[in-house]
Length: 195
Image 1 (cartoon, rainbow, N blue to C red):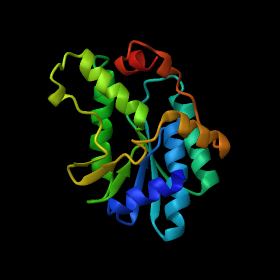
Image 2: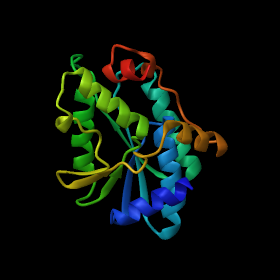
Image 3: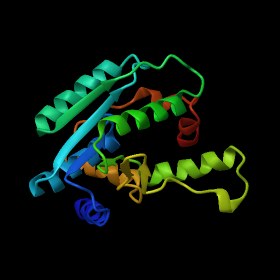
């Protein structure tokens, strides 16, 4: 069922033959990578995972090795980018902006980048906006399913899928993923909402 949802949505999005997936090694991006690889590789699309090692967590190199191993097992091309962010203030925002610029530099014009945001992320985003003081309902909007950032299209095909369904798919298909221990750190606003 999840295969069909993803396939139908992406076909409607007019993706070209080169599909890039933002791959952290976590459960969400692993499910998206696995699904995209199953659905599109047999249809002669070119699938590339992109892993960005932020070098801000003591486990970043372990996660990078996991991504290399997983992509080798699945025969998926993997691009690894290593960055160093020294500024501690607004770290989440800085990392997000770095990733956007990196993706825009390395992904060919008009190609698609798939990200694994899901329905729970959407809810967290709306709560974050409410907490930060946006009190006009007309100004509260969540994550968009598809945007154009400079020369690339960023698509979130799992956005209507609940996290529990993603977990179910991962366990049922015996996928391998990493658990990011920083998700338990409530100093980050999104973690605070989630936890």
